[in-house]
Image (cartoon, rainbow, N blue to C red; front, side):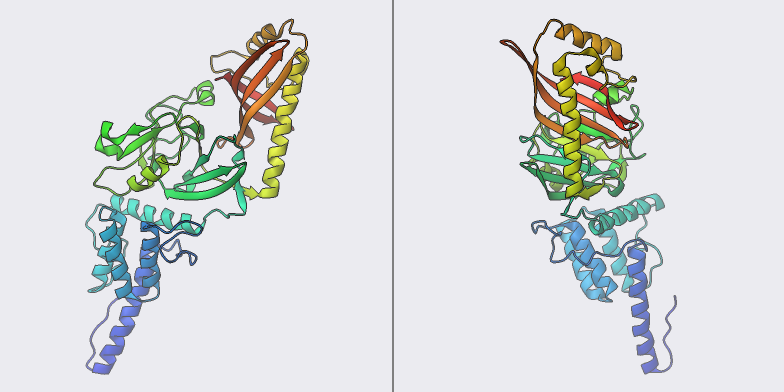
Length: 419
């Protein structure tokens, strides 16, 4: 691209205006990397359905929209406001640098004003793409996340991580009705997802729970204002031989607003303001954290049908357990069953039958049931509940977690543990 001054003043002005428009359009394409278009529904400094608050993603989109409309001064003003509000937001600084350079000459590559190494520029480019893509592909409020079949009444919130979009969603549970209340950009393992062993730099896929809160004052600056550890490896991870530890939801160092999409050793990393906000909405030991490689959404009718079917599956098991008939109980368990402590199916059922021997009439109830689709399996579900068994005047309660897998047309228990 080359713009030269002609001997004619009119021709020169016309050429200059035309050149400026070409530069702006080229810049818009360059900055958006040719992959994403700013969502028209995002405006006025807030995300659809979310309360208004300063948001670097929304401000960044405003820059792109002004640039795409050939309004360079407005784009520059918005970029200046972005870096003033978030001075350690490196992506914002990079975009602002490109805009400043556009005033003097055209740029052909993303980060043309930067001397950063190519790998750093590529990381920022990827961050720009996933941030904008996630805003274009926001969950439809009329659809439900298929991974969440049923939550306990006392589980007020759910954390759902979509690794494909580098996004974390927070849902509020109001008597079984789920509402998306917030969402955040996140970083994940350098080598992606599906953690198998310690040191593989991958983020695990599964259904987990927040186990504690670690205040930032007791952690290195690397973790930001604190951390929320999760219970990786869970029971299903252990029976499958997955190893590793220390998977947290945590913040960023004080000199950096955010990290590239693939940049952690396996943790889920949020910006520091987002981590503080998330931490205030979760409960230790009670908030589920589902990490999926591709979150799916279904209609409310299909979601209700799935919940009904899953509860019927669990009810059939309850009735057969209450019968104390070994054959009726066994039919619900897979031949490949494994317990966390290494017991096979025969060993697990033998222990169960010993506890039921001579029980006579047994009354079994299931309370506080939660049901989730397991994200790394096509047809797998995890159920957690309190099992209360009454024999005469004796009553015994135990919290259980069962992993069910579909074998042909039948659901079978592939692992079970008493919590």
